[in-house]
Length: 327
Image 1 (tube, rainbow, N blue to C red):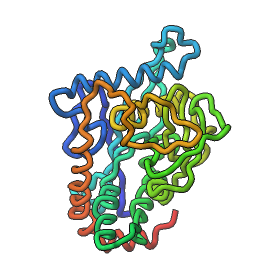
Image 2: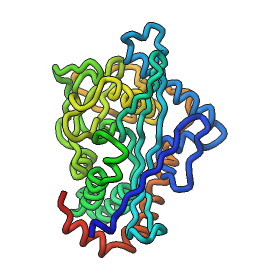
Image 3: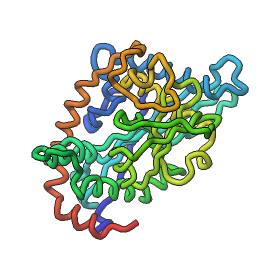
Image 4: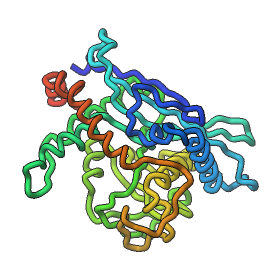
């Protein structure tokens, strides 16, 4: 059955001239920044913030703080249900890859792939399946199949020839810490990732990524105010270079400052025990326009799109494939 699933990978540059394609998930944070009257100003300021943050972390042999420039590639992954029917391709996920340019040496350096993570099937799981399951329940719970198909599709992609041909290392996803959990500062320090935090228990997001074969660690990088969640395979601290890690931090912390300013642009630093809160009122806004309410509404629409065009039409095939799938 797995031979009927083929992946194709496309990439487009995220720069000040970026326009979201028709196939891009419109809830994607970088796509949200690229719409409306402020689109080009948004993009320029976002990219400048990323470059500045990168150079502040990569400070060695960088006296003017301008040695590096960060380019971003949007990686779009389609899954073809049947190899001979290209029209059946479904937009599975979108991730990002940093492209680091060293102005001093003239070298281009590939950064980590992953970073932001956008998925139509995840929209379905959280905005359709989970809501329907809890619509008549007095206490919140998750259905037994929650995240199982999505996790197996992700692992199948990461182990695919298409992924191996394009990328040399496993992905790292970097997102906001959960507002429902408490995090405790540890004594562990990393020169790039910063101070490690540990959560009191796994969040639903942690459990969801666990089904994708990804572990989680929480770090608050130098001069940051809150820990970020890093989801990864293997050894996060050993498998990636300093510049690769800095590329991920500079990109994803910038995005978080824009659309989670209450947490990541707060005016006070996370303490020994920390619970992120979107109700925090002591924070600063960036000069970048972002419509958070629109994003949450569109997630439901795109979850229903996935149900109509992917889950229901191919349910028997997907169920059979998932039941037999073993990595």
